[in-house]
Length: 317
Image (cartoon, rainbow, N blue to C red; front, side, top):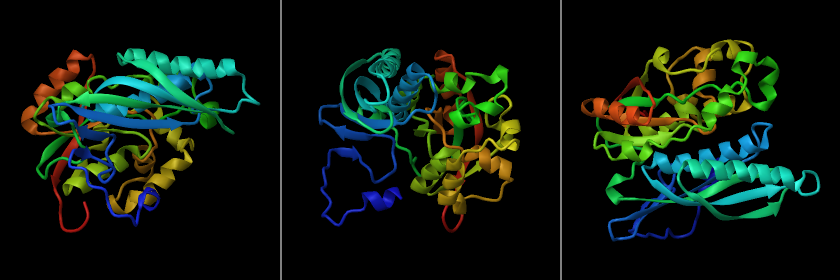
């Protein structure tokens, strides 16, 4: 669908300083200023996925900033995007949403510098984020065509406390998904500075397999995953067995399932799950894995090696 929306009959405007545009399914645009610095720019917003307005704002902002970290950028400021049903929801609730966004920005070390709001039928919140990085440090979704390990930051999980599934949620799992969605991918710039990190992306609405397929198709490689090594939230497989599978999972699989090998349905329901503010997916050379793990440890996080990228066989990866 996105390809249809973005298709244009107009002559393409070519700017040699635009290092990353919308042709490669990357997380953000990158523009070379020509002075050793590149500007990284992205935007993201969505409707509420939790009931608490502060948490909604915090998650939406964290999700938007994550695209910057996935490109190896260092954020410098953000502006807010707010749509609000002013005749049905009190402005005090909107204030709490913005406060959550401001809190996330402070965690990332940046100011919420402004924004724009409109009257809308449903609440919408997100950010447009500006960052910088050296041109050589930006990390695209697609790596060079060479074999690399595939490493996943441990914040990929199957959500179990989104609004339609709360009746199934066990008391000991209350708030667990919200907690993970509010974790900031601050280590992204540190990973991007390591030569052996050949690609990086954050796992969001397209699901783990969807974002991994973008890496593979862009680089002409195939991925071999070890399901048992993929980090999962406690009880996730029980929730899937109970039917806690969002509609987006099926839509995701319908769009890229033809690229995948055979797998059990329950694996598919987990790996195609549309994530919100997920963790980082890295393609790393074997020689650099120890350095990447050491960099992760400095941020108090643990990475899981979940498979390998290998030379593609004939046909699509």
